[in-house]
Image 1 (cartoon, rainbow, N blue to C red):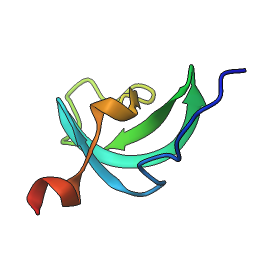
Image 2 (cartoon, rainbow, N blue to C red):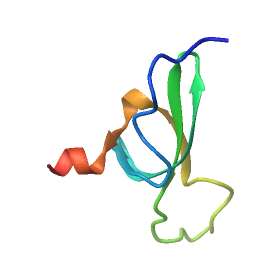
Image 3 (cartoon, rainbow, N blue to C red):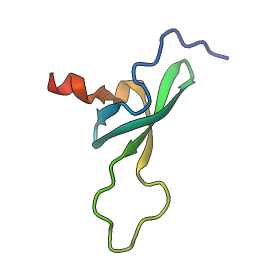
Image 4 (tube, rainbow, N blue to C red):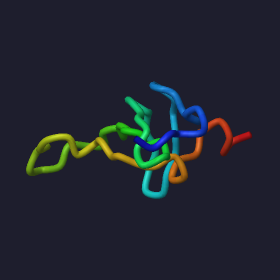
Amino acid sequence: MIAVKSVPKFSPDQSVRFIGGEGKVKEYRAEAGNWSYLVEMELGEEPEMGRIGYETMILLSETDLNALEEIWS
């Protein structure tokens, strides 16, 4: 088991931004000594072919995320 040396930077329901969009943290976990976050993006308009599965969820590392509050301050 690899120890994580820090506490997670983001918490559940916190709004975050990443390259390609923004969303809310749903959960996080330690992986390979770093924090990974499951982020749910807001749904846009429904495509003509309908929705399939969890296309609004993305797993990102902590280094890929910024808190929305930090960006606008």
